[in-house]
Image (tube, rainbow, N blue to C red; front, side, top):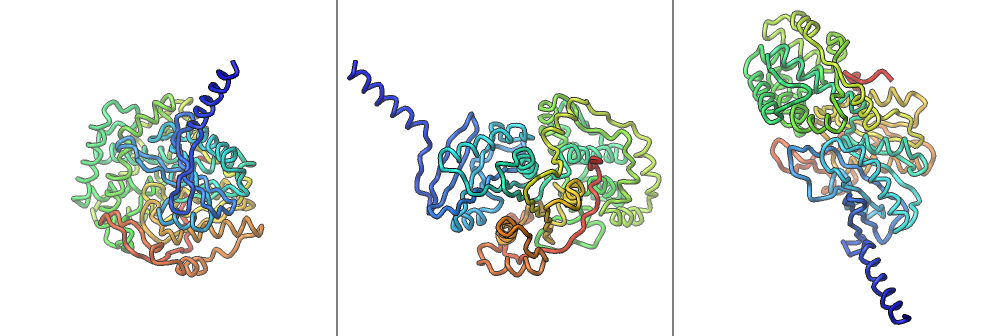
Length: 457
């Protein structure tokens, strides 16, 4: 019996050893990867760990594309390597559901990973929740709902007006195309997503070919606050046709999912349609839009009457939501601005996926007494930042956590600091030419317009 017991204990030890993630050399970092309850994760811990853990929440991966192989730990790869060299530990879950609006799983899976880190590596001295795009919502909800776990929050290009606002704006875009350009799109309860996306792309592309189409496409995009600027390497164009062309690029490559499988998956998850435009005053939305002047110029060039088209939008049949689905998107997609820790956000000024107006909606929820700083970068693109800009933003948040007061976040100060970093940290991905290019730090003062469909709280 004694010999059997020893054999059993040996086998048990081997078995338990297989369950414990093993560290392996990865440059200066210890690498831990595996699965927690079906969710893949990656953790990198440098030998000179400074006690700070950055828990990263990735953005929404579209169901129209394959799952990414790599688990992202930061927005820019160069940021990841810099933070490891400086002693930061980095961790991220890929979530049980990798693609689509998977915030529900993300909140649980990121919490499990934080618990795993504490048990396996040790309790962090400080934990920063961070994320980009829809992942910014995840990071914010984590910090709001788990105030004892997190010491700071940092978001990049976040949809912080909330999920309902984001999906409602896409609905407004499609509604305007249906009403003014006879697009015949299914806006909700889509039965043939592939055909619907193809029709959306065709209508947008055709509209850019003539003045009348450009005017109405400009109006549809203005309702969703989609800018007439896409090329991150160039200033915003001044010509109407050029600006509407770039709005169409945002539509075809970044907004099409709202009319296809991503929308279908959202409704399956939410248990119905969470979007609506009942009671929406499109005149009022246009009046506050940052793209209003482009619309007015486009209508003048086309010789069309803007008031007549706004009347058509006011009179067309509206869409009502399913109450349970609205509730789901509120639970898993609505930051309330009640974070108890310091918050730093960063956004490009021209983002057609998550317009910078999201930042204004979030700031209004936080209120004047909130511990919030918002940084803007004078560039077009969704999450198109240099590593130097991201690193400088994190340093600003760290100084706030160290000193209990914010350092200077004046653009000149931030640009000067970011400019001291090495050339490899001064690049962005040029999505027009599909290559990395060198640029300079571009922090700027910016006051975004109101988000067109932000909920009134």
